[in-house]
Length: 119
Image (cartoon, rainbow, N blue to C red; front, side, top):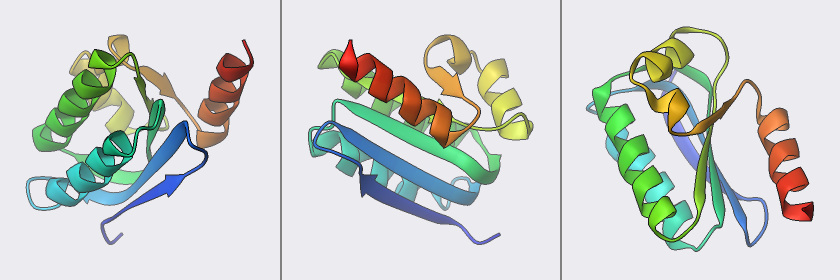
């Protein structure tokens, strides 16, 4: 699968960064660019959707950590979507599942965001 990273604004408060393929030393800068854009545009919550990602390395994890810290400093939130495969396992091993909220599907993450915005 070819790498791609896209940013979609779902609302003024929510951005979704969709990533596909392998996120490694060579492709992480594009992922970082999309995540940074979502953060800089003022989204209250940013969802990173790894549903179509086949591999991530420590560079990708670093992008998540830095982006998450930037959001938390302003009282904002990063959420991660990934299935039950190797990507989720690596996120768990790295301890990021205890730092970020991780969902199995984008639909679950969007429902949770919608529920929290109504509260």
